[in-house]
Image 1 (cartoon, rainbow, N blue to C red):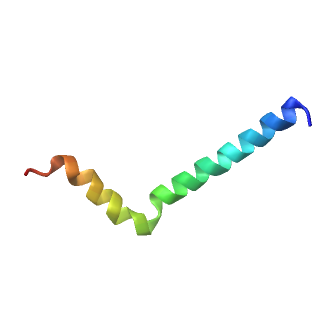
Image 2: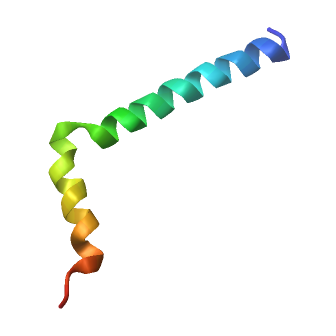
Length: 45
């Protein structure tokens, strides 16, 4: 295995991880939790 094959593998793994994180962030089941967290700075105590 040469360095270019390793670089290609790391690039592909990084892309897959990025897509998984984006999918998790926009998933419908997480939407209400993220909307609630987004309102925290605006709430007065």
